[in-house]
Image 1: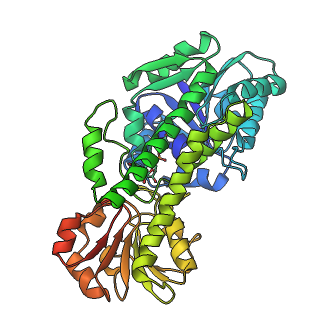
Image 2: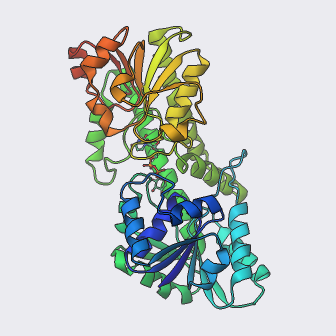
Image 3: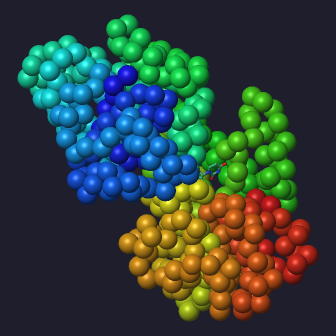
Amino acid sequence: MKLSIIGTGYVGLVTGTCFAEVGHHVICVDNDAAKVKLLQAGGIPIYEPGLEELVKKNVAAGRLKFTASTAEGVQNSDVIFIAVPTPPQPDGAVDLSYIERVARDIAAAMTSYKIVVDKSTVPVKTGEKVAETIKRYCAAKVEFDVVSNPEFLREGFAVDDLMKPDRVVIGVSSPRPAAAMREIYTPFNAPIIVTDINSAELIKHAANSFLALKISYINAVANICEAAGANVQEVAHGIGLDDRIGRRFLNAGIGFGGSCFPKDLSAFIKISEQIGYKFELLKEVQRINADQMDRFVKKITDTLWVLKDKKIGVLGLAFKQNTDDVRSSPAIDLCHRLLKEGATLRVHDPKAMDKAKSLLPNVTYVDDMNAVAEGCDAIVVATEWDEFKQLDLARAKKALTHPIIFDGRNLFDPAEMEKLGWIYKSVGR
Ligand code: UDX
């Protein structure tokens, strides 16, 4: 089918590329002319495993194109996906102005029937507003349908999640667009659920809030484990084997971050309130998440006492492993907390150092993770990168003034670390 995707961020670029990979003809549109130029020249603006190869392959096959013109995208496709940012506002609501702007641009360019699909994460009832807007601004007065098709990809696994989705959710207000949407997704061999638009929008917010709730739950359990002398990983294993619960998203640590969970929780709380329900449960999820960082910082200050003039090596800046994304990253938050206490920092991340530089200008960036500990008083693990498990512990021990590690992601084994002579503090163990 002929598709266009408006917005070439994490969701738009990966979605467009994977649609091309299964044989659709895709035009990716972005109003950032520099980004479009970069993509046209074969550059990739984000790090996402497997993406670069797929982009190259599909551009070469003539199935994937980039343009800065919305009209070009709209007029050369049957289905138009909106994948623009919906950033948070100070009161927790999301800023829907990019969606509204794109809806107007699409409306102005439409000269025949189109299906307009919202892929960005939006509060329930946004689809209704998009439909109203297109109707109002459509100069040619042609027919159209609005569809909600939320995206569930995880950064760092985006290509995999898109090529092999758990499910595809399609929210429609009439049967007409459902057939085309099924056709687009048939090559992905995933269960397809067709709902009304409001339900589809709610599925996204409810799914992400539930996952965040799961993490706050295990973090709360981790705190009980610390008080009781138990091990949260054993507890997580024990409860996770119940397949009604499941082991995934039960990793205790310094809390969740990223561009989705914090924003989606706030937005879900806000829209619930606006339509008449106070979602207190989700407010507690937020509170536990904030508290988790406070508790970890306290663990550091309880051990190192005064942080002024202490040098700390930080492993990890990204909000999680396998990504260069530092938006709402707990690791960056932790660095700010340590800097505020007067510590100086030597930091390393396998992929996120470039993106961290504007947020953390006054730290020393270290290219080799094994050199982070040089002259430091302690090491802190802030992101769950697998490769940190391969840290040269003997070298780090020699480089530190005292062998102290604060492991905010439970990457090492406490008994093993103790045997090696480390003062080792992790979460819930
Ligand atoms: C999330 C959802 O998983 C995805 O389905 C949705 O489309 C977008 O939001 P993402 O933001 O890429 O994806 O990150 P995710 O892998 O969910 O991790 C979010 C945060 O939770 C990270 O900071 C991670 O470190 C943290 N986390 C995750 C934990 O602290 N413990 C866990 O057990 C899992």
